[in-house]
Length: 516
Image (tube, rainbow, N blue to C red; front, side, top):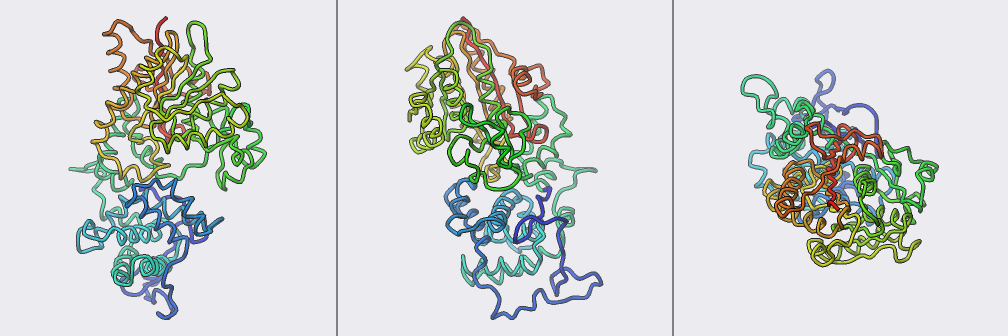
């Protein structure tokens, strides 16, 4: 795994990991002379861990126990602990770093424990991962990483496991990350080298995800040699991208508030650091946090050429949690159009309403939010819409840098389980769009089973029924829209963005038009 930005207990610091001297079981000093890990008397050592580490630990437990998303649970925990500034940044780095690096850290921990990791209590294993991240990928002093993690265990789990955690982390501290990788990762080169297994450990991805991303690169016409860069990009901390909602805010307002220009989207600005909620436009729902890849996907639908008359009825069949719907709704208000936003889960439909608050407050009646099944829209409202977005549920393999827990949560079985839903949603969208109208099929995954295979199957099915569909040149639309080169290089008409090339999530965009 490529280490993330080195981070100390109070936020980012420059330089590599700092190695202290240590007594038995720990690294020696420059001359090899041992010294104790800490001179603090046992009675004066911390007993419960600091709030930042506790918040990071609680994120890991919520992800494991509740299937929670780190990006949703972390802000709540930071507020509850009253953490801000550097302390909030440190908690964020610990939580996301431990989640991203889990595969690497588990391989190291397995070499330091005398039993299978699966036999450890899950809270203890999460605490060990937090400690390993501090030791191997931050500038936290080794004695502090160990003692504070042990204190965390005492306060959050109990006194019993504290000695075990202390002993394991002291073993982890015996080597730096490159040395550990040489010891625990399979070789990348030479006789019998298993590149997939080696990259799975070194870049902290499940082996099946490494294989899936390699296949996605090859089938998109990209060199397989880009695979390490793609995996490393998944482990890099992304900047926060913002979208200025059309008619409600301008990127210039975000830039004046301290953001930097976006790379691709005409609506984008980027915040390298800081809380986007500090910006008035974000607080007032006139701008929102949204990856540039997601912005381009929605804008591609709006830029795709229609045939025939009419461009006033749009639909988003999978609108939750509302990012693309907000952009579409704001654009609809500018163009005199209306948007139907459909979300099957009622609680996510409420999130859509919240995301649209800035638009609905300024333009009453421009959008209708419905808690319903997008698969039914085609039969219930056939031929009614000029433009339809299908932001299909998928494995999310293209957003692993933002949702690091997804790589450990998904399995190959998810591809097969999602396939019928993806095809049914695209079929419903094509029924709902009028002749001459356009459907955008979008996934935050580059996997061919979720992208090209779905489009090919649906196009073939419609052709059998006597209505051939036109697959528009999505790369050309994005090129004209934003100057981005997102062709797949395989002769196809699907656009594919990549984190290691474009700095966005790996969004896939296909544009289909029904003939007149």
